[in-house]
Length: 325
Image 1 (cartoon, rainbow, N blue to C red):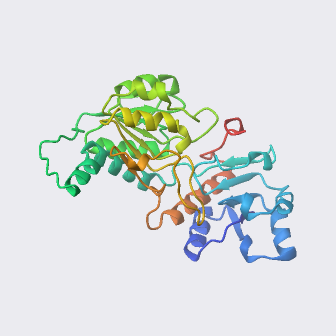
Image 2: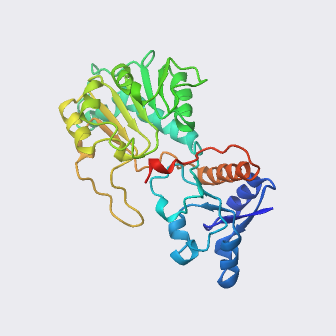
C-alpha cells in the first residue's frame, strides 16, 4: 500500500475515520507520532499528504523532503489559505469539497428564515418594550433563492430550502445540474439571478475570479428587501459596499457567517465597519460547519478522496492553481 502521511494530530476517532476512508488503498502514517530520522523518512516516502495546514504542520526543511508526494489533500473545503507557490507544480492539490455541506446548509436556512421573518428586529423591539403585532415578515413559499456556488454545499442548501417552499436558481461552473432547479447557469448569468432572487446564498470558493464578486453594482441589482447569506468567505463581497447598502436599505438583510478579517487563536475579533450595530444584520462566528462529529466526518471524507486518487479514480475538489496564484 502507498504511504499516506497524516500531518496533523488526529484523535482516536479521527484515526479510525482515516483508516476506514482509505479502505486498504493506502497506509496511514501519523506524523505527530514520529521524531528524528523516523519523521524524516516518513516525509520522504509519502505519496499523499493528508493535511489541515501543511505550512504549519511541516517546516520549510520538511516541505523540501516531499519529493515523492503526488497529492496534497486538505481537510478544509476552501483552499484560499494555501500557499500554492510552496507546493511543487506537479503535485495535485484537493480541497474537501462538500464535506461540511449538511450543517452549513442547516445554518444557511436558519439565517434566511430568521431574516425573512425579521426575528432580529422583532426581538430588539420587544426588548425595548415595543409590542408591535402589525410588523410583517416575508412569505418564503414561492420565493426564489439564488445559490451561487452549486457544489456539495450549494446542493445541500437547495434541498433544505426547497423543502420550505423556495424555488432554486443555481449558479455553477458548467451551467448544468441534475438537481431539480428552476434555473441553472454560470457566473455569466449572475445578474439575472441577482434580479430575481428574494434570497441569495453564497457557497462558492474564494478565487482570483470570485474575489469581490458582489459589489455595489450587484447589490443594487437585488430586490430592496432581499436576503443575502454568506457562508463562504467574506472577501466574496465588497465590505464597504455591503455596509453602505444595508444602511441605505433597512429592508435589505444579511446573514454573515464569513467575515473579512477573522481572528485566529486568542486574537480579538474586530470589524472595520460596525456591521453588528445594524438591525438588519445577523452574524455568526464562521461556525456554520461546527456541529458534533463534523470534523471527524470531514476527515473521513478527505480520506475517501485520497483512496479514489490512489485507485486511479476521479477525485473531487481538485484545484486549478490559476484560480489561486
